[in-house]
Image 1 (cartoon, rainbow, N blue to C red):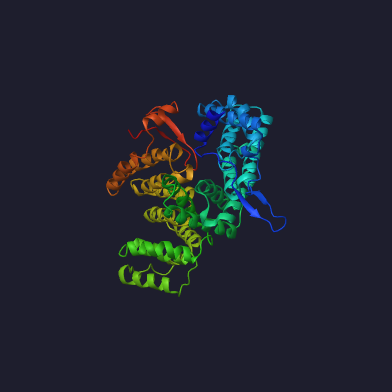
Image 2: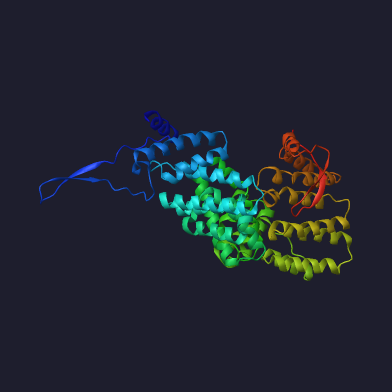
Length: 474
């Protein structure tokens, strides 16, 4: 029995507590010593509460099942885990790994059956284990995040996107900027998709996008889980920035914080100065306010260009500079339709493509107008350069920001940049982009594991939906 106790203590990394401390209380009448046990605040059964034989059986089960878990022998571990868990779910009153082990066992059972009823029963048990952990140790908001995470990644057929979304929302409502790191990426994906598809209101989208931004700032600066936050920052910010194309989603404060800093870093870049001004106005900053006046002053001093003569083209530029992006696109389209000048058709279709890319964040539309530009000026490499940039920027849109799904977008991007190289004007830029992005392609091992090989054709899905050639970084 002594050896078993020692084994269990080493296994849990926490020494099982001795009998509860006692205090002596001297009552006035009668004059006698009354021994009071320290209150046990854990509502779940612990080993200390068991009889000698029950405790011996439970401790043995804890030790034996854990060894099997380490060997990934989940089916063999299950009956022993049940004995340990259902006899003393709180173990020594402080350890929690028994809940994680039970979840791992039932997850393995779920993944190794095709029986729909069994799958549902296994997931139901997983959720019961989570609930029991909350009963024993609290942390409901953390556990709700775990539940939502599991539904999103492992048990999608046992939940609905709406149910998972609401569960994640509850976590953000409770934890705000202290939301657990593992919640950020899946909820960002659900939220941004719902906003883009108009399944949630702009007000709701703004509320939760702002919480996510605050959580990113808080988590990144916390100094904890640095590797995880690096992965998150390769995904969530790009997805959230893509929402800038939705009018009213972000307020003036958001655009001032982001774009005035960009201006400070690039005080002489006219393209950036113009972008900052239009973004502030797009974000409904006061046209007569301090921030807009500051940027207008800088633009007047460093970037003055004579406006086009009065007419449709001037109206289009005015609309763009004032942050009225959809209106400016329509006006540029009207101009393109009204002119017979092929060079102007090419130029302004490309400009429309850039507005859709940089400002409205609609990549499919941007590609459409870039390719229209290429039709009018086949010798220009600029449209292909832009489409390549669209594809290369789609890692967070088409995957988690890292890994296979996010890496394969480099293949069609390089296809476009190879086409752009035929134009001497942009050849150096295209060559530089190809050299930069080659290192982000999948490795030979990644390709081999998927039973593919370099040189074969491969269709990249997502919004890109193009057939390309498999390449590797090594």
